[in-house]
Amino acid sequence: MDQSSTALPTPNSTFLELPDYLPYLELCLNWTALITHGITAICMGFLIWAMHCQSQLLRVQQLAYSLILFFYAHFIFSVFCMPYQMYRVWRWQAPGTYTQNTFSPLALYWLSLPELVYYGAIPSVVFLLAIERFVGLKWPLSFIKRHFSLFTATMFGIVLLLNIVGHLLEFPLDMGLVMICETASCTTTIYRLYFQIVSKITFSCANVACSILLLVMLNGIDKAMKLNNRVIIFTVIIELIFGVLPCFVSILYNQVLALPIGAPNSGLKGEIGITCCAFDGAMCGILYILYQLFPETDEEMV
Image (cartoon, helix red, strand yellow):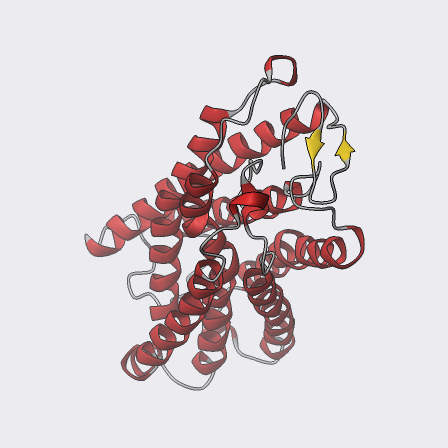
């Protein structure tokens, strides 16, 4: 999304005025994403530290492998996603003071790599966690950690690689189009985040379906199976609000309402999706902190 106080050229040589409120909306989105990434990094970092130190703060000492991967993935990506948000905030200009584009397309492209890969790949970890819960209905956690860990790591690695390749296929950038870009998605002129959106919506929908199926199955399972229904319900709500709905909006936008690269709103959908993903991670981090530090039940497997 590009912030010109006058007008912006598009590939069709037309001029579109940029509403003054949009730059402020983008700044709000960037600050929100930056803060929520920080919250996620702190929460997941604490859980990783407590897990390795076998801290008594954690009431569940033996965690599922996919949950450990979940903590590490959120922590690492949150840390590496923050530079993009910092760059966006640093280079932001108010509409009344805007003179020229101060953003480097190459900086936007490379700094956004972790952000867009995080957006597309992180739902796959939740999906693997759901699959591990299904397996946990039949086999003990020790069996799962011994035989399921390689499958989990391999599947996540494949999804991660596909999202990285999808981003790298945009390079080299078409500098004739992206010189006026001020957002990450504006620099993706070839596939327009196709890999990330498909990955996101596929696993988000699968997570909702798996979570609902788990809730149905658990109605007939003895409570000793130690699976927490509240975490599953939370997963359904979060995936719907911050995963499925934003992705469908992005698809609709791309197919029906998409503007030329550089036009007002051409990159705003990407910033909204990135912020939703960051907020999702922060909510999950807070949930697991509360779940571990303030237990109300005696489940042994998350």
